[in-house]
Length: 83
Image (cartoon, rainbow, N blue to C red; front, side, top):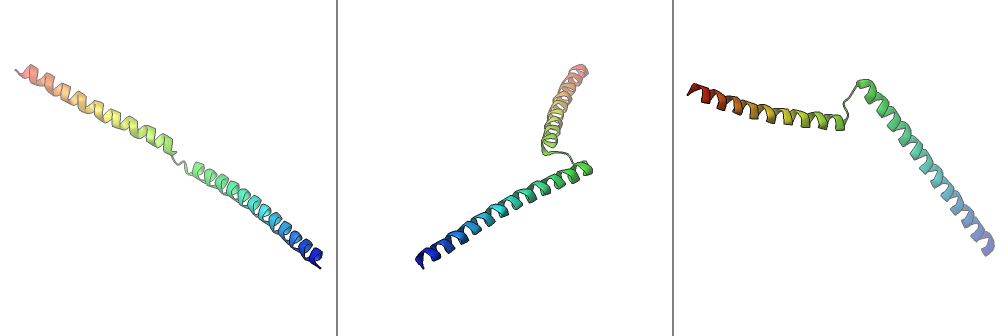
């Protein structure tokens, strides 16, 4: 009887292990499918990627800083000409 009980539990454990492996495979497949669909939808919406947004944001900041520096320089030159 002990041999049969151990074999039964071994089979149940193997079945559970296989089921867990299948569940992980299904989860990976779902994640891949979901990610693919999300990327396709975002590409169709023409949404800007974060890296591109950050790059443009940095460019705008640099342009503002340069603009402020040029305004100060122009003001200094105008003051010099006004003397």
